[in-house]
Image (cartoon, rainbow, N blue to C red; front, side, top):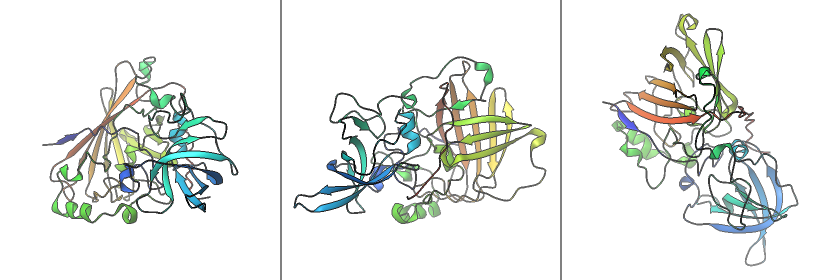
Length: 346
């Protein structure tokens, strides 16, 4: 029996910190919103997330430096925020959730520029101080894909939109990791996991399979000789899917992405991945063993507007039964896979 779980978690909190896409509940107080005003002292407008430092005056009149972080440049670009909006010396106002782990740190949801223009930084949020704002439109807000050119099949750029479910779960008040059919060893690993200390994706180190397929940015299928390349924007990663006689004749060394072998089932691309040595099912504590087998199915809609996706993960060391997850992408013309150019610090 397969445990079917389509985790319908939007992109409201994605991505948040340098360690990847997870709920603000692990690091920030999602129940508390504070506002700060001050002068920009430092700006890092790069992936995996925008970060800046502001000097604010506290209630006692003392200057306090606050570290502010927000969405990735890749996400902001899909919200039509495509340029660096602030510079050192600018006066701004920000609203967001304070850190529960670090003093004078915030995850910002809104920013008010010195010009009076507001920017909605997080997900599908609404303007806070004005009637309209940047960051409230763009490809990420699409609800349907383009229906032209269905003959192209999967070979195009596919986009994640805010209305689509995420593939992998996040820690939040409505989801319990223990609802997965975990083995005793996996349950113990989840119980011991500390997101501040044990997160597997810091310092711009790329994620492996299956975790990388949660990435919420554009991706493109490219035909190369007999094989297929899957170019993922996050970390500028490229997966090779070996097809037919292009498949390796001998077993390849284990790697974070593993070895992926594909076949066609009508218009559906079926991909089996083994040889994965990325030891994480997700970024929030569920482990993965090298015995894992991952089967993916990429099924384009008849009109070419949507790419439906399912992943079945079988790992007897982690799960007592196979686990199936689902998501989809839309085809939005003119969208390209951008440069990720991950930078942890200035």
